[in-house]
Length: 229
Image (cartoon, rainbow, N blue to C red; front, side, top):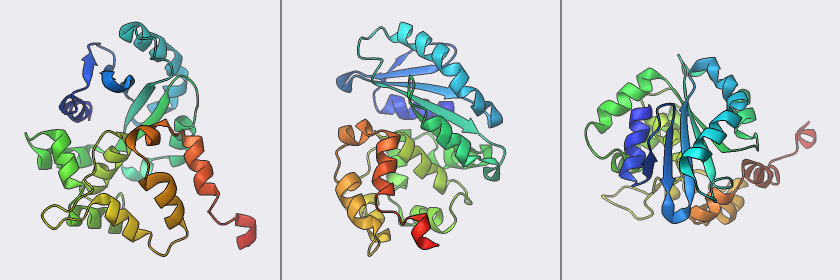
């Protein structure tokens, strides 16, 4: 996975800071920093214990005054099978507020193999941005969530790497992801908050939102469990 992520970041013209233990990328125009680390299986439980050392090493490598408040940690978590993913553990790690803004990308070898075969030698970033707009890709993801060849992995990647561009115009009769998402929540109580608080945000404002902020916005319109009983 690190090779595919590396191709995506290079295609997006982020500057890599060479290092043998982990990958670090800098988006200078936005003073945004990305650290990429691999934790397979249950080793992901070591992330919070390792983060201080990782933060110090990366800060010394980057040498930028804006680093502290603008650094993201993308954690690649390879699992033997998707049924092994412990979502409560992942959420606990991602919501930890210290040192990094954390995102976890889980995947299996089979998913990665199939996605790499589909992308081939083409530009990885362009390929992801193209595949994500295909109706047949979205249909597989929607109807067989996390139980398909590689389709759900594409959406996981796009969610965790916010600079992946999602086209908002129709190309070759393909609907944009924004349009697909809006249609999927039509006549749903989530529709208004998604429209106002997520779809209409520009990339910079969305990236500035913390996990806690997003959760609070969703909690505001989700039914109260006590009221349902």
